[in-house]
Image (spheres, rainbow, N blue to C red):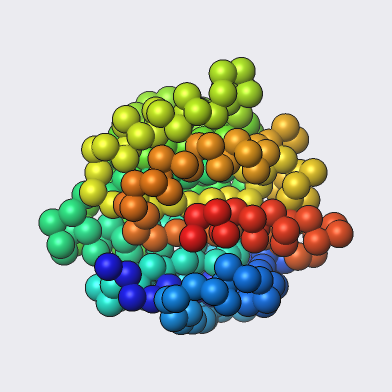
Length: 295
């Protein structure tokens, strides 16, 4: 049984193509502390701040690789330790490259305890570019590939001694902006995925059933990674890379209902909130609604 919830602040925007998401954790956590669901929980709320190196002027093909590796290494150990302490680690970002650290931390915990890990990934982007396929060199477009063992060695090695994830352990929902080379990688990865157009065409309950069948029933524990840009920009304009025609709150809730009922949620990412792009508090409201629903 979980004893506490550990909020992990990861002020990271080095993996993104724009600045600002490093300020997301402070803004979100300040807002969360004012709402009823947070105050009324019986669990203690614990906090950890991950240190992130300052942005420098040096540019390379894989931007800020060393700084992001160091950040993810720290996060991996914080998540792993929190899970051993029976805490629910919630990594608040910051850009999505942090998922390399949080999910490798969850994978390490499962490996050490003879458990299996499934991943549900909500995102407008596939995040499965490799250093070779990426057109930008921005690592927040590569975390899923890295988790599958296709990233740069310095990041991939953070998994050891646990194995990489296999594509069949991951369900990606809401994707609607994929690079041409990235699409080939996604199709060959064996990752289950539901493009946003398909979700709109059928209904989110069908996606929920697919997640239950292919992920929830097959794995002992689940890591949920939510990129706020999976939402429609009318609900969450406050992201670094908004994409039109995204999810509604009702669709997200329907898709995550089986996870909520399963009791298998092991760890959680909440990433890409960028307060520089906030409009009328919409992103804060949507973020609060999502977290309240899950917890």
